[in-house]
Structures are given as structure tokens and as C-alpha cells.
Amino acid sequence: MRPRDPRARRLVTKVMVTFWEPGSERDYRTGHITNISASGVFITTVAPIAPPATVDLRLILGEEEIDIMGEVIRTLGETHFFKQDSGAGMGVRFVDPGSEAVRTMMEFLT
Image 1: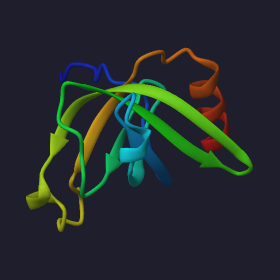
Image 2: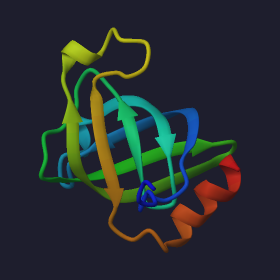
Image 3: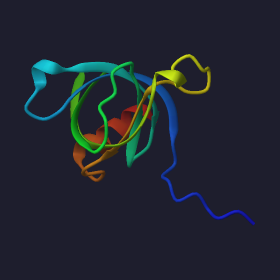
């Protein structure tokens, strides 16, 4: 019997995101959230930020702009970018998964 997956239930999606390291909003990068849960996201991007790093995420959902702080916990390099099942990018864990911003995002996407 396989052990139960400890990760939160994930949702496959494609949401545009802007992200940057705190204090460097002028050096923003863009990507798409392709996998999301209440605890974090995977962002497909050609310009991932290497872990460990804190990042600010900004999503536009409908008419609402949502800012969420996260921690980069892993990256996938450019060699993965052209595979159909994955892409270059980074896994980000939310600093405060119980925040109002995370709840609003999850309600909008589900």
C-alpha cells in the first residue's frame, strides 16, 4: 500500500502572474501559474528565482488584484521547458497559506 500524498489537493490551471523579490519590484518577472493548491503554486517561467528566496506574487483574477508572499522551494531548469508535461519554473510555498489573499484566490479558481 502506498503512503498517502501529504501535499494539499492541487488544481491544474493557467493564470498569469508577476513576481519579484521583496524590495526589487522594478525587477519583476512574469510567468504562468500552472499548478496551484492552498499551500503553494508552480510557476512556469523562463526566469525562475533560485531557492531559497522570498518572492512577492501578484495575480489579476477578474477585476481583483491579489498579492501573496511565498518562498521559492525548488526550480526546474531550461532543459525541462520544451517538455509537454513540465516547464522551466519554480515551486513556491505560501508564507501564510491561511491568509485572506490565498482564500480569495482559491475561491476564485475553484
